[in-house]
Image 1 (cartoon, rainbow, N blue to C red):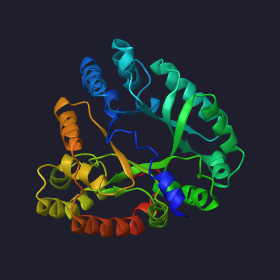
Image 2 (tube, rainbow, N blue to C red):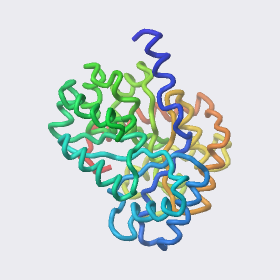
Image 3 (cartoon, helix red, strand yellow):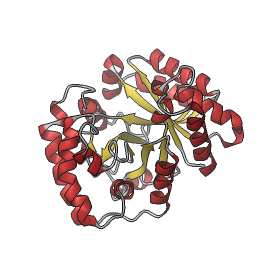
Image 4 (tube, rainbow, N blue to C red):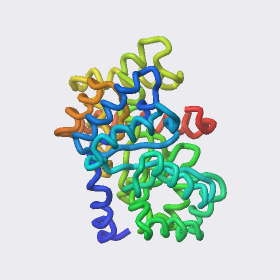
Length: 313
């Protein structure tokens, strides 16, 4: 790839806020509904981007309901949004777009997070007609830009699409779990993303919670692999001198020049404020820390992630 293409990619997704408010927890009914609406309003006041999906709860008092009520309080403050669009056909993607926008009472979305499945994923990876069909949604103004969602078990699709040139000029970036405990793309895909200077949006900022809780609190980690990784990462974090886990994770993600934003979810005002403070002035972590974590992530990917059953991690 020539320098001109690198220069072009260097500006992609640069308008996305360094911290994107993830709305997963707005669907948790263990938190009073009004409190969830209030935290969404507070996030709107900051003018940062939001990340949403009807999968987080589209029924009464679910995440989308909380968002709509917050949006209805001041439609002038409706944020720029990344919205998940999932399907195994163009029609399913279209229907998902319609359902998401209807639930939020909006006309379009700034970035569509393509969660491609089955035949649609294969057609896209091969540079098929699905790309033209998806481009029509952008031409109509429904979806301004696209990012491609990746997991370990879908890395082969993204890798094939990149190698075939299917993403060039169409996909603005890639979005996947990326934090000190998770780098949810294959090693081969990761190397190609770095080589091609592909923009990245990192999801799940804090990997599910403070590293010491993941390591020390029985049952806190929802899967054993997170507990095992926290045991390996905690000493690195402790030696870093960074004040708190949230800051460490935000700085970790943004230590990679291609990362445009990190997406973190909370319905807790204190935790939300921690995200904001950590994102005000982001200094990369020392290279030794990045190298140590990267070595672990290469090993984890080969030994665990790429052998996992879909959605088991």
